Length: 461
Ligand SMILES: Nc1ncnc2c1ncn2[C@@H]1O[C@H](COP(=O)(O)OP(=O)(O)OP(=O)(O)O)[C@@H](O)[C@H]1O
Ligand SMILES: [Mg+2]
Image (cartoon, rainbow, N blue to C red):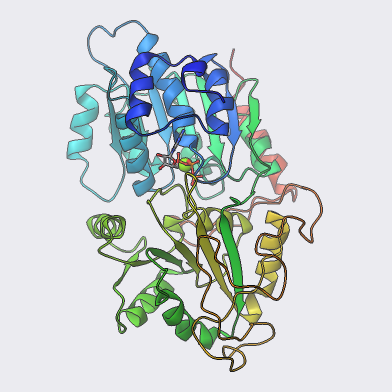
């Protein structure tokens, strides 16, 4: 088995990964780290929770550490862009953790809080800057953040960063980054269209695929309940009351929906909290922190929590609404079963959502089996339409002690859908930019965008 040592990491980084408790590199780390150490541009695709952050952070730290010491004031030499504030903070924490044995410094800038401390940190001099696009543009506009020294550029959640919600901001930023740079893009979902678009930002990129785009992690067991819209609330009450639900993340499509769900849950015995873009930043952070430490057992959130967030031991992800886009499903359920853990992803699907469910199953190349009705004697359907299995089974445990399902095996690896064709991933809704604009499909609109990008952002070197 390959070790981190085999990847030729410097002792400072070997020590840091050992302190993180990592014994061996994950597949994406094993493949991407040597290429990145070699200076290649990389477009990396690997499932959720498989260590993409370290896959790009470790080689960047190593390359920065190898550069001659900076004389005078430090300007950012590495820029990492991420779509949400909490994810930017998390990546910033990872940079600090992986870099703790080196002299490399980093800071994170994001919106929703006053800019003073962030501006001071940048002015004091940093090597690695992690940022959300909005706040970065603000600070760039005030000439607080210079990007002329950036040599390493990362778009984490690259497909999200290049969808129509973020693309204009990201391009404005990227145009200020010198063309002589190493660029790396990572995500668990990379559609063909995004890859085409991404190529314009990269120089002779090497594509690293650990699994085809949108592959879900095997250790996350997935089930669906076919219920009427009205039956979703009562079913959710029962689902979150299951004894094996230690930490559940419930996704809704809208902020209003999230508020309604959390109000309902808080009428019962289980403590639930809510996280969405209309809440103040300190409230968002508090909610996430309480969830992480276990004070809150159920966190209800919109898709701002669907990408990248790494919370230990989320046993259950529950889609109260079927997400509009298949890729949003992949990222949502990827909040569980991370770093080798197991988890259960439950989707509540009403009649109007059947089409979206079918699109998800096609994209993930998996037929999602129906779930058993939790903790209730056989009494027919949960107020629903076709399909929900009634029965007195206790609900499925996340660690593979699943009740027998009448249909497909829990992990249907011979899905109803044949081989790959890469799905047409469209952007998830972006809370900052309002309802998502037209999806970036192969519909004629796309080549125009690529062309414009190419024109204004010519190939380097
Ligand atoms: N080599 C390793 N061995 C053990 N655990 C690891 C290793 N690398 C990373 N991890 C842990 O795995 C978890 C997931 O890592 P990370 O957040 O980087 O995943 P990701 O691939 O970026 O997922 P997502 O697509 O959801 O953003 C983290 O808790 C991280 O500490
Ligand atoms: Mg990630």
